[in-house]
Image (cartoon, rainbow, N blue to C red):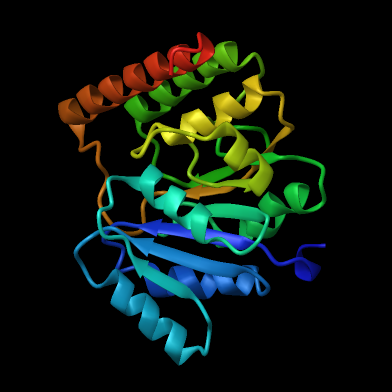
Length: 244
């Protein structure tokens, strides 16, 4: 069914010049009918490289330098307003997720069987063989997923995943607020509390192929993950209590 129905792929980038050509080639191969919107908020040559790729491949990819960018959530909001189709999928350009999973991700929404599809790195069937495990990240994700499952009143195996698909109806109705990274959780919790249909799809996950992690390593990684996790949990509680 995916091959018969167009949809929009929103790719937000921040200094992904090293991987963007490979990313676009694999995304296009996986999703021939999709509209691709790329929003770049960094300062390197990602946008230029994407435009060059589009010209070389005679592909009508839409590339925007997201001036005034205030984070990934902001870029996704811009992409939503630009999307031509009623079904959208967000994809990370660092290739931690496999573009080849896009058809399975978007299919439930295209088929009208779900309003939101979450690409899960942690449920049965997910492939993390290409990922170098991090103790602090894994424990942090486990804590968050359990806490958010309680807040959202349903089991969520991967609340912070960067691979999601949704319907236009859902994304406008939940009206997510955050402009940075908390929007990932916000989409899930607001959708669940409003009673939208949510499915979880096992995906393939790799260690970062390009760009730079915002968490650092060692003690810095622990402090960053702890701070981020507590902030996400706090915001989730505010949503649950109707305070945000």
